[in-house]
Length: 163
Image 1: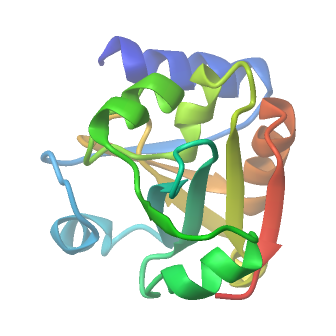
Image 2: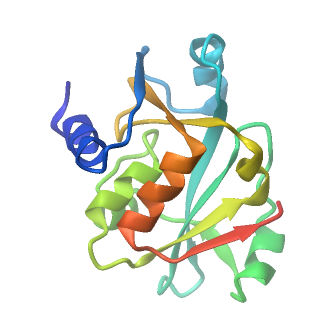
Image 3: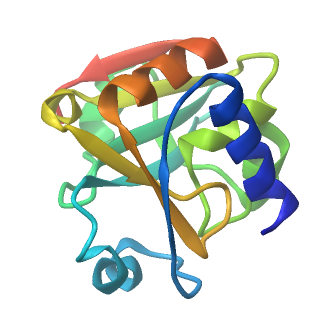
């Protein structure tokens, strides 16, 4: 197990959050992950790391993997001029992650709480969610309630929107 994943396990254990770990080959996209998620009873999430046009605000968008993020709509909802994908360098700087392993668990590295969370409102109906544990060779299944508790512990601003 990598150091990145071990940090996630330690944080969840510290919070008393239970999880199930599912190992799989490296996957960089939802499409690659789907065959490996087929047997996991959970809502599988896609995570997008975005920035505003000036690069002064950063957003982690979390939504059901079957949905498409409407960047124009998100731009209006967060009152920005434009949103676009952040560079790998920004992803590493703010979340300690590399492309293909974007996950809300990267928030453990954002001690200054600079990344704003945009959460799809439909995830409130999920019993369990899956996310990479900061590496793309495994997925963790946690309850939605525990995920919300994790986000609260992280301390980042969270905005729930209908996508």
